[in-house]
Each structure stands twice: as structure tokens, then as C-alpha cells.
Length: 119
Length: 111
Image 1 (cartoon, rainbow over the protein chains, first blue to last red):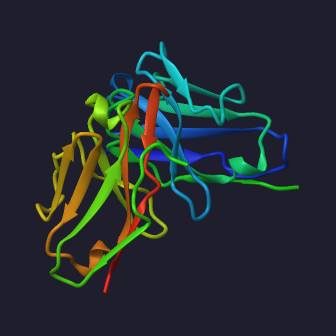
Image 2 (cartoon, helix red, strand yellow):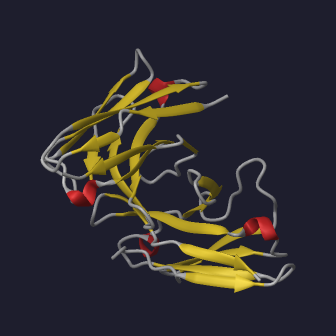
């Protein structure tokens, strides 16, 4: 069974940092690209970061470029999102999702981890 | 504002057919990139419903179908059921943004 479990969310002040983790199991992690998708309360989905299976290629939405960094550890079947200089508008549920390439569907999603940005 | 435009809401009675549109441009749908559709129930993570414009993952009933024409795509739910009440999102790849993009989402209400 494919499983993706996010962790690391919480309350952080504006300008602060958080590191999200996504632990996976049930598939050959090293063969799949991975993604982070966020959803602000009551809003739609936004793809914020993508990393290729071999970490050679990364992509960031303009809204987070220069502040967020995606990485992965194929040995531990995990993907991470380092978030710095957090802003009010970064408050959202953050999901990790499995994909094949940047234009492939996200076929499995985690349950999400909530990031709250507030002073 | 998303590069993929969806109607905020659609509704129908049980058993009726509803269609959700997803309008893009020549840098995404019109460039030939596939469309994927997701369903999100309240309080839950999104779930893949249609991939590659018209293919269904295992377990998705054939009441759900997808199509594409030009710079637009559509998701059709035939024989609407109460459990179809959810938010639906389209997704594609945008070559000018070099990344995946989602539509704003459409809330389906079963009357």
C-alpha cells in the first residue's frame, strides 16, 4: 500500500522557518518525482515545489522562489520542504504528492500538515 | 488568479449529468499537455479522478469522464449521486511557467 505521511507543520511567526517532512512507503521512492502542494484555508490548490527522482531538477512556484527549498533522501524514502522567511500568505495545509514528471498527474497524496503563520 | 479557469460552482439533481469546464491557453492545454482532474471531499486530501485527459485510475466509476478540445477541457459526471458533492480541480502543465498549474476549483452541489 502506498503511503505518504507529512509532518513538521505548526505555528510560526512571520519571518520564521519550518521544515516539513514527508515519509513514504509502499513504492520504489527513488523512481518517482515528488511534489509539495499547498492549500490556504478555503482556497484552491497551488503546486509550490517539485523535485525529480534523482534530485537533478527542482521547480518552485514564483510565490516561494528564493524562500523555500525542496530536497529528498532516497535512502530514507522521504522528501522535505525547507521554508524560510515565512509570510502570512504561506499559511496553508501542505500536502506531499507523488508524480512522474512535472506534467504527470499526482497519483498519491498525503493527508497534509498545517502551517500557521501568525505573531 | 489561476491560469486555468473553472466555474466556481455547478449543481444538479441526482441522476442528472453535469459538466465542469477548465479553460486554459496556448501555453498549457492548447500546447498539448494532458489534463488531470482531482476530487476533494471536505476535510480530506485531493484524490486523482482522471489522468491523461480521459483515463480513470482503478476504482473510479465510469460515470466520470474527461475530454479536451483546443484550449479547454471538461469533466463530465453522468448520473450524479449524493456522494459526488465535493470540490473538483483540473491540473495541467504550463510551459511559460515551467510548472504544474491547477484550476481554482469547482464545487459540485447535488440538489
